[in-house]
Image (cartoon, rainbow, N blue to C red; front, top):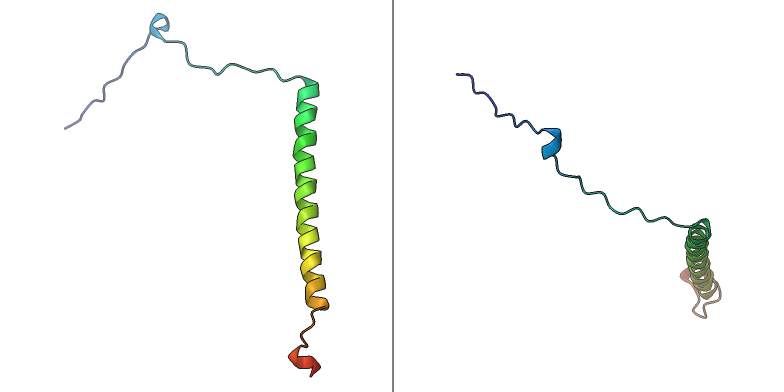
Amino acid sequence: MTTKARVKVIKKKEQKDSFEPAKVEISAKQSAREMVSTVTGWVNDFQCRRREETKQAFEVLFSSQPKTSEM
């Protein structure tokens, strides 16, 4: 009860060219521009988050409602 698997032999001339995506050459100037843009985005996100956290902290600190522990 042995079953033999089929093996397909592909000769070199029968092989189709494998699909290779076109290589896009990015200049050094363009890659540097992309890096600067990415880092600038990170910095802006960080500063925005920090501003929001600071704003919330000041609102809690200087809230007009007395806390139960202050009564």
